[in-house]
Length: 550
Image (cartoon, rainbow, N blue to C red; front, side):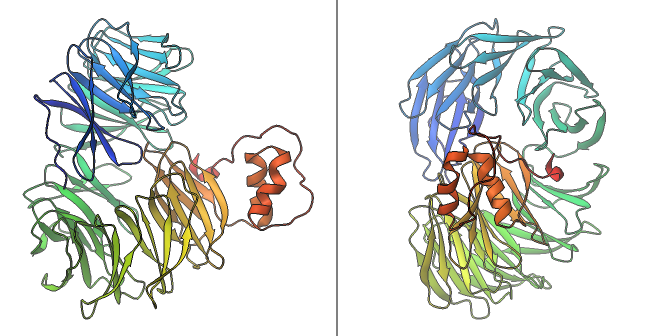
């Protein structure tokens, strides 16, 4: 785990870059700093605020950093050079919140002077001022479509604003203390608010009504997972507790207490009867979902546990730790049955093969490894990635492994020989997530602002989906293989039609480029369907997600 040391005073704000490889911090020592997430090294120092930066935010492209200071100014910085490129002057008191619009052309700021303001980043001009009753603004957030802005205030209210007109659309009342954070749901239909009153609340954006109140967890929530039947939600928190919530009601169903440090990873067993948790306290624990009782404590890792995964039959649990080992545990007894040693750095990804006979691990040491579950022997060392391996996934028949990492390629390995048999190239950023289609004929990869679909028979790219936002962090096929879901670093989730034939692919290409370029696009996919049939010489709008995502 990296530790970021160097600030001379309290750190007030942190934000990850879109690719997850850098961290920005703002401190009362008057500086904002940029850090390498893997090594913990300081990469840049941004000085200029008279009073310490209270808020930091990356642009969607990751090339700029915005800071809001106690001096009442917001500043824009060039990440590559560390130079200040703009100073936004107008607020009369400290700037407590900054947020870029989804397309990155505007910046929203919230201030203790009781106003939120929208700025044109190119001209540095204030374009809209949002004023209410003068209550201090602690947090700002754009909706996924960029048409609304949410603000959290010290008068115990959150407010929704029309970005174009500056009109207040709704006032959300119910909290009993300052609102410090606001966030839109991926579809933009709901707003979550966090308050000093120790509660989080969920609101309907259209009606302004409170839908659910999640109270009790203190500190940040690090991990969330749905139960197999999707009726419950498990959350792991910085406070060391795990909570079970009713998805429909928002009610807390159970509180699982016992960990002595923050919980990093949670996973339901295949039958939904058990919950596994991994924590910074160096233990993994098994819980009875029905009663909330701890049924087993798995001790042995010498450091924090980053990843947990159940075997397909639910009898084994795999854990990956900062101590560089993966371990296998008997779910029924809680006994450690195997220790998988060989990685030279923390293990952050574990995955069982479909039959449960093998385990794949991905590590910060730039390798993936394959292990025999029965003997705990390493049977393959997969080297080639130029950075940490973020994701490992087996093909449906268990003969192939696809790995994604810090570099812009995903690699395909034949597990019968250990040889790299294909390289999926062309992605613009780190490959953060991979999934096979249920029938095993296609692979989806998430990288940068695109999800790509690859044909397993040829390993050629057959489709490209431009996701909203700037960093696809997760991809998943639906069980029937007809839909693909993407999750972005900006909180956006989109659902796409994955069951398309060549005609659908043609539609995608037609919508994305001018007609004149279409034949070359289709040729690059190995298709020959004759003359294009779409009309017009101008680019059409990007293909939209299916109605399920609207």
